[in-house]
Length: 378
Ligand SMILES: [Zn+2]
Image (cartoon, rainbow, N blue to C red):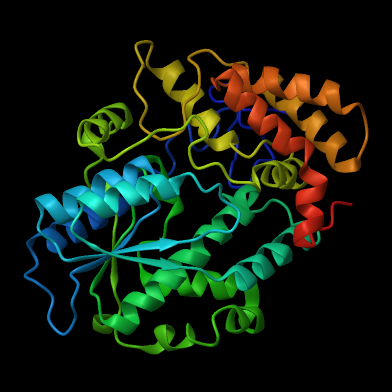
């Protein structure tokens, strides 16, 4: 199969088209005009939010989606301590995530003057994930991000929970700390987020998952709907993950972990993207990294939160990872050999040995994780 000469994305990757020179539409910046529109919109909304007087009829100026990760901790501190906003810090307890973010949340509670709420809905988010994974193979050629559908759906699920809370409490803004690379992956309009979800999951399942509450948002006036603010995208020129960590450490707001935001579904997310789209889960991120390195010989800065080594033979790493992932899912091959291969591959992608071992173990447990959730692997 042919792949992009610059970033190595394959011809069949959802949303990717190669031209006669074998260069893909992402490398050709076909999204440039969309990007400009998105950037202008997010910048305008952010300025509007910063200049807005305290909201009336509610106790909060914004609902802040707070994960406990470095990006959102950094920005929550700014919102409350620097901008003087009255913030409702909203954390959704994702049942698939490891719990170490909880420590950072405790540190934040002690030092950041905000109201903290913890939301959860294990049954419905699991029901949704089961449905996504157990669907028949998707129709080709697919659209941008289809290879990440389970992950995108999970994030959308808790963004919708936050939207519903802001809507009920009449909080005018929702802050979402997507990193600047995610600009093309996020809907900025609340009604569009709701519509997309209905499109993906259908009316019946959507109404089951949200108890019929989303429908009201489709028909209410614009002025009654919260607006989504993306502070990192608005401030993209200043985004520097290493400096963020440094500042947070100095303030005693952060304890890093080599397994930062580890999702227990990561092996299954990879199985999904290999099985349906013949690519690894982080392919777009890795391709974007390869593109930046090729375009700029001095490239040494991260503009998004996942790190990759400077030189990376992406095609080779991906092919070997795909073989192992599909073998584990099928219950084939020798687990020790699989583990050894995975540890080596993750280390080549810049993981420490500890982190590589931890993640490799979770891949070996893939069949059990799937069985626990009612996900069929065959
Ligand atoms: Zn490309």
